[in-house]
Length: 353
Image (cartoon, rainbow, N blue to C red):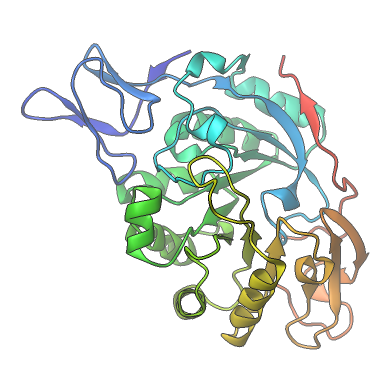
């Protein structure tokens, strides 16, 4: 169900300029943007994937990854197709790089998605698999319907969005995981075909202008973005600009898409990155995409005792009382229920009716 986009204007030469993401694509009649899903049709910018999804699934919220947002609960996850970055290492390239939007067989209105989430008694939905920025209108409309039913919303995103659009987008999000792909402009321009500064601007906006709970993921690619100095500089920037309480996830790369010649990330690299981040004063640092129970568990920044034990996505020992450490009373940053969920590592496909 293609629908009119909200973020564009007509240029003096008669073309349309999209101002949803920092690419500011300028489109003649029939042209599509870099994301492929926003198209000039009859001199209007149309979101061609509105109401269409690559599939719906119940996932553990920790898989997004969010470790400090309703731990142990399932989230109804879905995405569409396309992306506004061109990462050569994309781990979801079959969806995010797809230019065959006809493969989006699942159709669902925002109301139907919200009603399904309510029927399944889940606490949140997640816009994920590909970046929700490019289907912002669909995500926002769905978020509005979910909030009517008390269901929270999650954006799993690269944070590549303009100042013109990010206010409305994040007004409708309760949580986000932002993929900070690297900490150099060289990486962003050559490997992701974008720019670093807009992502940093988004992170500072989330911290200073919203109440969105957010966490950061850094996928570590051997020999590409895993240098000691880059990791230290990134962690120092996070501490200085976002504070010590923002959780950071260092996750393992596996060869994919156009970077099949790179090796898997060694466990040691992730553990060293975690040590660097903790040394820079960050309180909550995790390893991901590897089996590392110690590195995926949460510890009290004050007394250092185990607060939330995790083995992959399965919760074990749980020592939080609301938001406080059971042992010393330290208030832990995040959004927590009185008791954790028990969803564990299940992944359950869902049909929307």
